[in-house]
Image (tube, rainbow, N blue to C red; front, side, top):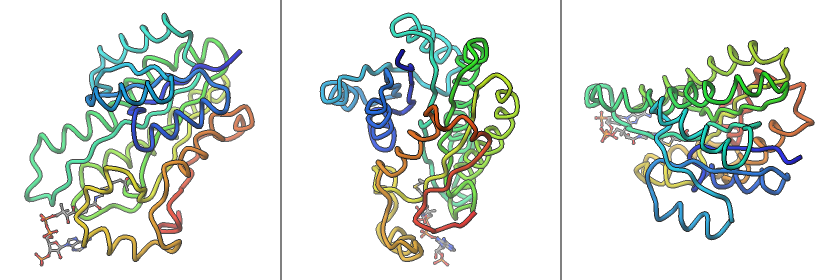
Length: 240
Ligand code: CAA
């Protein structure tokens, strides 16, 4: 039976590439998205993958959204927590709202999705959770105390939940992407981005598909002995 996989923030960028990789791997894939209806419609038209809209930072909406997916598609076997936002700015200019929105969505979203899916995985004795962290959660980044804290939190969350899931066949891992050629990275001011690329030993931005291959492995049957790990996919920018 095909595994049911949900990818949050799955209709564009890295999330879209993950959806396609998991579909190719034989999963029944569902995407979640937060805001951009036009992109979500185009995604479903192009891939045939259904897209469900809710804010993963909203606990009740996440519980309801996952329950709806389980009713429509079946029990959720694989969760990829990919949804994330940036609200960059130096601390002086960062508002409490900028801090809180990033924590609520990027880190709170992982908690909410786990609450919705982990108990069922544990009962059925099989599950895969992959949380998309970031190089900036490992190394920090000027102008990102909110994002770096949330992504760093994801790495701790991963190791803690991995310990809870291990004896029930539920693996929990993180991927820490470096700078990948997505809309999020395109929003970084060009002179800043040029300086960042100059520090990537491989000499270029990553591609979303290169992150998706890592997710495909971690969520496969072959990944069953890998848990609590962080896979860094960053062109050598931070060796950790
Ligand atoms: N280290 C040290 N100093 C730095 C610096 C750095 N990395 N970046 C900027 N500065 C300095 C500048 O030289 C400048 O100094 P002076 O005032 O003495 O000249 C000062 O900080 C202010 O810089 P800016 O003019 O750039 O300040 P700003 O307020 O206009 O913008 C910023 C600040 C929003 C943080 C901007 O620099 C920026 O967008 N930086 C990129 C942040 C980034 O990499 N975000 C990643 C987004 S992608 C992502 O997050 C995905 C992922 O997981 C990898």
